[in-house]
Each structure stands twice: as C-alpha cells, then as structure tokens.
Length: 301
Image (cartoon, rainbow, N blue to C red; front, side, top):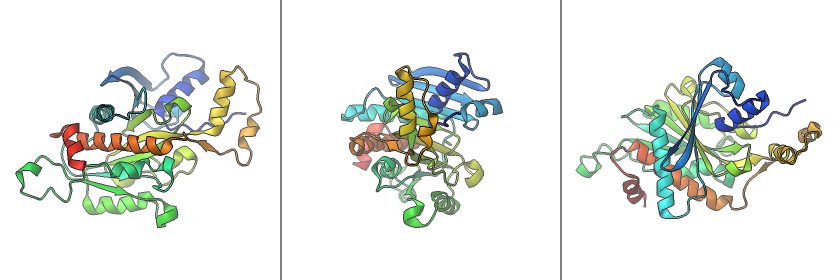
C-alpha cells in the first residue's frame, strides 16, 4: 500500500522517482543538469518521452528550479534574485521576443499562502495602455497586461474561463501564469522558484485541480512560474519518520478524515510579500528587454 505524495516541483518528483527506483542513474526519458545562475543553484529537468512522463508524473517539457539560500530581504538581494528569475525565463526559450504578453496571478488574495500570484501582479510593469503613445521614453516598452483572475469561490468563474475570455480579447502571444505551489520538503518552502513551459493546473498541488492553462486550452504558449508556500502535512510526517529510521508505519493513518492538511511558515505573510516582489521585478525585466531590473524598480516604485 502506498501513499501518493503531492509534488509540484519537477526536481522533487525526479528525486522521489530515483529513490523509488533505488538508483542514482538517469531515469528513462528524463535529462537533468545542475548549474548556477547569478550565484544561485539551478536545476534543469527535461522530460523528453512518455516514459519520462510516467516516471515523474508530469508532461513532456522543461522545468527550471532556482534555489535561494535564504529569503531575500535587502534591496540588493531582491534585485539579484529578480535577475535570476529574468534569466530563467530567457533560458527557457519559450517567451516570444516581441508581441503583447498577459501575466496572470492565480490564487486567492485573501488566503496568505495562496496570494503569491495576485500579489505578483502588484509588482509588474504593466504597459499595454501606454504602448500606443509617441513618447520617445516609452518606445522600448513591450505591451504587458496583468490580471489577478480570482477564484471560483469569490467570482463564480474558474480562472481558466476568465483567462480564456481575456486571451481571446487582447490576443497576447504568450501567457505567464504565476501560482503558489506545494513542496515535498520543508526546506524548499519559500526557497525555490520553478519555471516551466508546460502550463499549469491551478490548485493541483493541494488536491483541488481546476481547468488546465496550457497551449491546448488557450492556443498560445503558457509559461508557469511558481514558488512553494506550503508543504503537505502527511508527506512531511512521512519524511520525518523515514529520516528517523522508522520505515514500518501504518500508511492508512494518512488517509483518515482531517489528514489533508497543509503546513506553512508562521512568517508566510512577509515571505509572500518579498517573493512576489522578486517575481514581479524578474518577470518585468524579462519582458521589457531594454530595461534593467533597476529600471523596472524605478518605474513601479
């Protein structure tokens, strides 16, 4: 009997698949490599085949994970992390060089661990309304629109339904979707940033999957950016037991009513605020290629 652990990070899915196989050799259909980006550890996982999809439980695509050694609090730390986000988007190779882009902040602004997406839209350099101007100083701006789509419980509409209508109206060349994720390991909560070119299924990390946002549903490339803000309590308990050398425990305990809990840091409000700033600056810098992160910071201040 097994317990299916909730995993949003491709890096963690790879680690768990390797552990389950009892080997450190490459998984079939999966390519992984380690590097650094602006001094931050970067892991690239490419899922290449259906065998890779089956092994990791994620669709074919590229998944980049940047690890932050600590929460960026000082201005220079925030700017450096934002440069890392911008560079990841460039390395992904999915973002078109020109054309309007829609950035969607997914999640519920009223629930702090789920507010990463909406708060990120507050730190974006939004320019679609300015790009028709003849002002020379604005000539380097790309048309960028942002939307905090809300959740069905407050709007009566799925975020996918809302975004499909907006995409049809403004016709962006790409959608960048920002959402909070769930981690398997507590040390990765609010310390890892994942970027992928395979879109996203909002709510899947916490067992509340909604309409998928991807090329198939929207007709345009969808880049997903996420940071884990919670860890599944059952997964955390199992990992702690295994780390303590306890292998023989009753898995049915983790299926009891009330076991579907998620744990978040007690300082999650300040952490989400800082990390949403990092994402907003990084995404804006990647979209407006003629602007440095310092330029973007000035515009949105």
